[in-house]
Every structure is written in structure tokens, then in C-alpha cells.
Picture 1 (cartoon, rainbow, N blue to C red):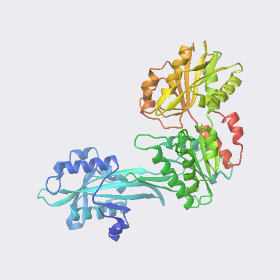
Picture 2: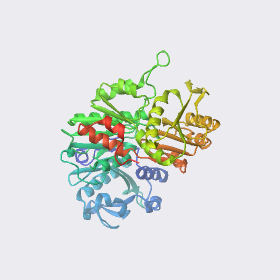
Picture 3: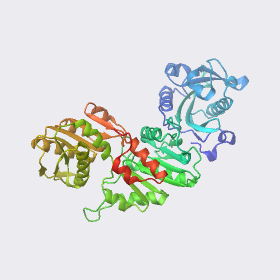
Picture 4: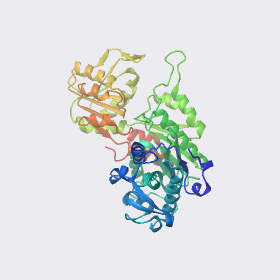
Length: 504
């Protein structure tokens, strides 16, 4: 492997990383390397070994020794992002993008000299701004006489910028807001940016082959009010801990770059379940997360429907803002239930206060009494016990409300109890639809009509499998209104009371 410290100066100026023991991350570069290794005969594969696969992806060049140049044999379209509009048969020296041509020529020279595949990384700059990260693989090919004289290539481009279109101009002064969205929160970030009528600020997020990440803002942040949106649920390939660490590093980068204030917006906050000691020597994970965010320089934390609001607010010494989605749910169910008798049920005693506040809000919107109920539940060593149900729900449509649905067992258990006590229709409502393990199977077998969640958590395969009974309510208006009020010193209490304007 060649590190930057060992890279010749002429290559160091062109590439940020050069590796002769390549472990590509991108799909195209990984496929090209696997194909090269599988086709290798002796020193390297020949054109005949790889040409069929290059019809779909990748490119190949043949050396022109007398001119110290390379001719495009196949894949002109695939290499166009680096060279501009070129055709097969053209030479690198004829390419419109001169810097791109120099990059390829220098890399190809090095690959043919070493006789092994090489992986490089560099940043594409357009109009003076960093626009994308490029992972480029080059591997030597043998000619008919067995000598190395051609190169197989493939590239993966990761665009840094995904700006959201602005709908309308905001009052002067809002240009000091910078909104970033990390990882799988990009779609939610774009929705929030549209609500705020500001562009989503670009950033770079690069993944190394050992799983480590590099993050940095791609706009100046000095003196700005920065908001970083990152929901911290676990998903395939990324645990909540991974996402938390990336959020922490990005906040640190913003601080180092001179941001005036940094607000972490974690619609779903990881490690919030363990907010108190229930057994000797138990950890209090919520407090540890708070200490990490405080230490890196976050000025404020915002979440939606914290698992335990009191524990959340007490864990942080910085400003902590606990939004809730109750107004969004109340507006939805007020329309969905119509004149039907209704009840709100908490699936456990710990969520009874949350359900009661929602019941009162729904009762006000429906302008008629709404009954209530709750179940008894005890969890220890992963086992859930408790079958006591209290509440008069016979002949009523029931909304079972909780802050999250994980495995679905608690909600399914409550739904069966409601059906046994005479509920006519049963709806599940939860802010965070995690749907882990076999949640879709558990919920599919439960006597429920509809599952209503918000988009605080990015859609997963489980969301797709629950289609038909799953309703997703957007929280972008709520988050955007909170940002506008925090930036302008407005009232968050008023937002929690009335909900965002124009929400469903």
C-alpha cells in the first residue's frame, strides 16, 4: 500500500490517496477489481479476458508508447465524468478536461510500472467548489505478446451536494442558518430545507475500507448558526453508535471551522431507553450520550418524542428541546375517526402520561369525550410479562399510542387485549417506526387496521413489507418550525401546544 507520505510529489498533487493493495468501497470499482482478479492469468488479464464485462461498466485504454499517451479502447461514456465528452479511439491528450487527462495518464503510468492494480481517491472541483469524491481503480492489462501495455479502469463518484429547492424568500438574516443532513436523514433534511426555504448545506462524508468515516462541511460556517440533522436509529450496516460517532465528529468539525452555534437535531435519539438504573450497577446511557455531545461542543440538542422527557431534559446541561408529534397524530386521527366513539390506550404504564396528553388533545379536536385505557407490562432479561388491562373501550375505535415500535411485541400484545375487551377497530400510532427483527410478522398477525408512524426514521425493508397498513406522517413542518423559532428566539412551548402550521 502506498500512503500519502510515500507518494511521489507529482502524484500527491493529483490524488488524496494512492493504494496498491486496493479494497474498493464503491460498487463499480469493487466489481472491476473482482473481475480483474478472477480473469488474471500470469501477470495480468488481457483485453480479451475483460472486454465483454466492460460493455456494461468500466473502461479500458491502450498505451501509445511513442507519444507517451493513451487511447480509449472502450468505455468513453463511463470515463466522461473525468475527461468530458470523448469518443472511443480518442487519446487522453485530446480530452476536454486537461486535469482529468493528466490524472489518468499519471495513474496509468504508475500502474504499468508497478504491474498491480491501484486505487486512488480525490475530490472533483467544479467552479472552485468541492462537488464530489471520486474513487478510481486502475489495473494493468497484457497485450497479445504478454507485455503490459493497457489499463482497465472503473470509477465511483459520490456527490457531496444535494441542495433542496427553495420555495420562497425568507426574511433577511436567515442566510445565517446552515442546515446539514447526515447519512440516511438526507431525505428528511431535504424536506426540512424546503419548509425553511433554505438550501441544504453540502458536506463530504467519506467512508474508508475499515469502516471509519471522514466528515466535513463544504461551505464556510464561521459565524453561522448551524443545525445538524441526524436520526440515530440503527439500520443495515450502520448502528446507532456509528451514527452517533459521525454526528459527534461533524459537530467537532463545525466547531473547529468557527460556527457560532451548533444544534444537534436527532429526531430519534439512540440509547434513550436506558435512562435510569433498574438493576444494581446499571448504566445510565442517556446521560453518557449527553456528556459526549456536550464535550464536543454542541450548544443545543433537539429530539422528537424522547423516550422519557424528564430523563432527557435532566441528562443535558446544554439546552434540550423535546418536540412531540402529538399534534400531527391528533389532526390525522380527528379526520380518520370522524364521529366514531374513540379511546386512547397506552401499551404500558410507563407511557400512560404520554397517552393521556394525547387523549386530551384528541378530545379537544373531536369536541367529545374520548375514553382511555392502559396495560400492565414488566420487562426483565428480555422477557415481557403482565396481562392486566384497565379501561372501558368496548364498542370504540382504539388508538394505541407509544413513542416507538421496535419488535412490535408490546403493540401486538396491547392490540390483542383491546380486541378481547370489545374494541371495534384498532390503530397503532408511534413516532418512531424502527420495525426491528420480525416486527412485520408480529404486527401482521395482530388484530390491527392501520399502523401510523412518522418519518423520523428512514424507511427500511420492513416499511415496504408493511405497505397497505402503514401510514407515514412527515415531521418536516414540525422540525422546520422549531429551527425557525430557535434561530429567531421564538417560543417552542407555543409550537408544542399548537403544532406546526399547515401540518396534516
